[in-house]
Amino acid sequence: SQTIHQWPATLVQPVGSPLSLECTVEGTSNPNLYWYRQAAGRGLQLLFYSVGIGQISSEVPQNLSASRPQDRQFILSSKKLLLSDSGFYLCAWRGTGRAFFGQGTRLTVV
Amino acid sequence: RKEVEQDPGPFNVPEGATVAFNCTYSNSASQSFFWYRQDCRKEPKLLMSVYSSGNEDGRFTAQLNRASQYISLLIRDSKLSDSATYLCVVNRRSGNTPLVFGKGTRLSVIA
Image: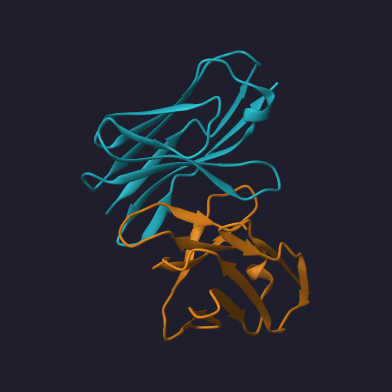
């Protein structure tokens, strides 16, 4: 069966520090992968999606970037975090229509 | 106009009540529709897909109205454990294109 791993679960980072969140998928090949962010009390905002290695589509301009160095690995990064980057970051993969989510990373920028 | 719109609630209902949520979407090319449930501080999980003919899963009934571009979720005999945020989700186009999530409707079932 397919599983999606995301880490860390929680993260507290100072403003201006770099960020790297990793997501890996098991049990499937060539998955479509997504990064979403959910700010406190708000809906899920699609940040990036990838249909294959090295292929990244960005939904909104922002302080973040994404990379897909391997088929089942999707990384979300920032060179310098802002306070507004705080939120709940969710990685997801798409299979037969529905989306499966990782457990999320709760990021607090202080 | 937002791609997917939902009433944020909260809906506060007593146990045993029937409650209905609606959701509208703006892209008439949308092909797939889902309801997800999200518990506090947790990831969203699929509740049910929504089919053109409508579908039922136990106490939950989902319906799609393509002409008016809305989907609905009906929960009968509400349980305390139904308390959560319900997210309306739409696929922009056919295939594995990104899913677009509504902001969710919060439901609190009260004893």
